[in-house]
Length: 363
Image 1: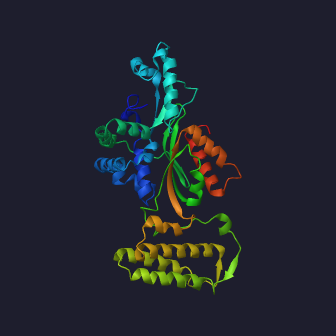
Image 2: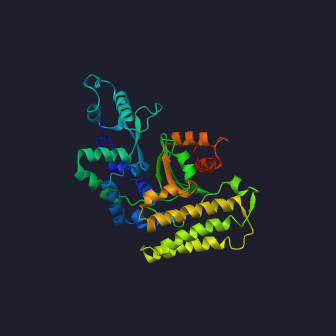
Image 3: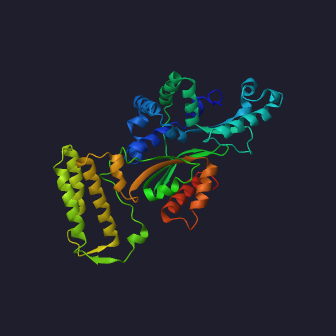
């Protein structure tokens, strides 16, 4: 069953900009302010090229951040009849619309059906585009040009620490889109287990890690462990220096080498006068040693970033866009605001809850 005869591209127009932000999050190290001014988000021409490129790569997942509901009982009855069995066509329109809604819900995995609204179905733009490609490749690529015409600016609705609510639909079971920054990949590994939600995360394949940071847990921050600097700091820094000498002699672009060496020099300055090292210091030393191996792999060993990243810690900072129906967002909040949830994901869940409450959404 294809939904292109039931939904139109215009049905998604208010939430299409979130797909561009989700996609740019994958390929950019910038914060939300940067993304909201990125030409591939705000410029009609650049946005059209960018979205078309995503379409060419069949990068459908980012289009799940755009969502629309439709009451199928409002469709022309002859259109509904195309999708129901002949022996059911004598049923009332509302009943046939319910059957059609259930059919879509059972075949489109990013759709949403609630018996409280029996004739209503919600689907993501992802499904519309997938079906359009099956129908006509020409119309499929034209759709990305049309998307660029929906020049609707993204206006964040509120922020709480790491989390910003950038989109909200309140009708029926609603839909929310969040931008989450300065969290660890350890946290996002937990987050993506909530498979009913949609995600677009900063890529370590396409985004350089040169200026990235390690997220330090409060328990490590507050640890009283202290060790003599001698025998700890010098050992790590000597290894880092060895790898940096190799990077400096590589044929990498001078500005890349300068950036890497500048980062390492700034890091070493922090330890110049230290007489003891904390557990937090050791975490940072290990992190920088891992990044030095990453640099060595990329610039000297000619290893692709997508493979070099295997050495990087899970505690590295990342950015992610999360979206989903309010019913599934509530499910996430309920589970992850529990006191047994780990501190970082618990913080984000509470931030999401606060932002929705500020918008009058019952969570």
